[in-house]
Image (cartoon, rainbow over all chains, first blue to last red; front, side, top):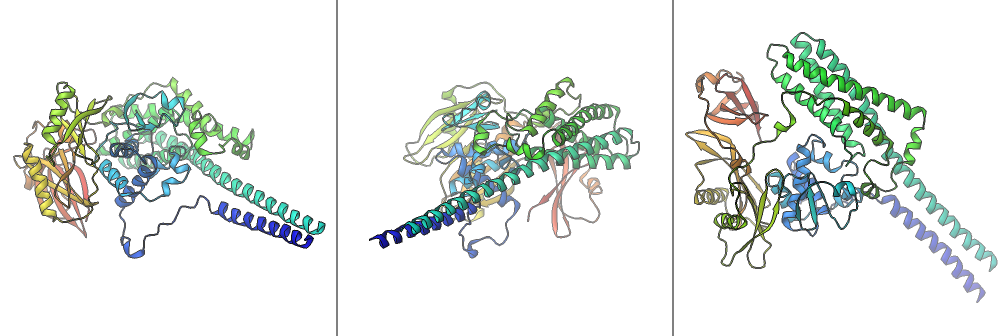
Length: 166
Length: 437
């Protein structure tokens, strides 16, 4: 009986060590972007800058506007493009999206998820000049932010759960 | 029994200690990397502003086109670099308008000076503008150098790390800029810049925006009528209603068109004049059944049915099983590029699934200039090594949204093709666009 208890205790110890090892490996791998599983033959032989920009914009739309109406998705993409054109923001799509603290989806890694077709289409519409935000530079979900500064900005439009401001 | 218990407990404690230690190490590594990125951006910003001050001072004393042009090129390079550094700092949501606008003013001034430098030195007005900008850059540079010195002597750089946010999402929701010494330093510089007047520069930043649609204000019911006349009649029982509106520079109504259970089509109507600005249809097109020529035909018919003036197809882009057709108005054989409309056609059934006509509605072209040069005379201004493939008159916009009457030459140079625009009045090379293969 005693010997069985001793063995059980030892097994628990070893098990804990194994769990710790798994957790360490998991923690060490956190933050690494997930690898897309597209088979090589489905990849385009050569991506142009335009394709890359569309992809990044679509990732931002997919992560930021999941569950929003289509118009709201296009508006999110348009806000990013409005910033690119504005002298107070970085002048590339990547610069705007990866500006420190600008987008939570960059901080929490959801920007790395591959976009769906609707997000790609929304980004494509915005790249071709459609701007449902009417020139907005910021947007926020009033249920999720208490930031007084962003709430004090003049409201241009509300689409779905997002408020778009200048 | 007791010995085994102790051993098991020991292994457990060691395991937890290893896990905790590894977590601390990983966290510290990430924080140091983050801090290193911010520090690099801040230090590089200081270096680039310092270089900018030196180049501006040299520009004020330069008296030859060679020195002036070299100086302007360096200024542009340093401005772009400083703008990139600002974008890498955790300064999102912080009001650094004056610093960012200062860089934008210098960029615009340098570009305009470079464009006007055929043989003459910058005009006195331009020189005065650069002198004002130089004074402000001097202030920013002195403050940045002082902050760097203070950062090195008072608190170690490592202690700044402790003030970095524990988590970025929390920082995003906190009062902007309240936690970062680097950003606090920039905010102090921003405050100090209040004492400077706005630069008296001919090309104000406001002018970087194009014209907007105009006309008499319409009601919501009129907006619905405008949308009903515009939207393709895809099915019986379409329900149209104004579901949103926006304020801002050009107020609009959003009319949504509901057809059965499909997600709504949205049509944006300008309150001023009732112009249709854009239309988006979220339908995902799954396959291609039509040829490009057939799709262009659908787009042309769509515009013809809505009584658009004569247009010419200038570009197509096939993506996501949709063909984006870009047309510009053609008036007496002259392409009016500012009057651009884009029509998206579904590749499965030819349905019009997108329209964008903001520029078309905003630019009312009135021919005010007549060409001084003939097309043959303008050819002489195109580089000799280029082979001219096509030529035609065209109206384009300059960076200040001024309309210019030009001759457009499609040329082949090496393996690439370009569109070169020669001013029809004075032969100036207004614009060069590379034609994507």
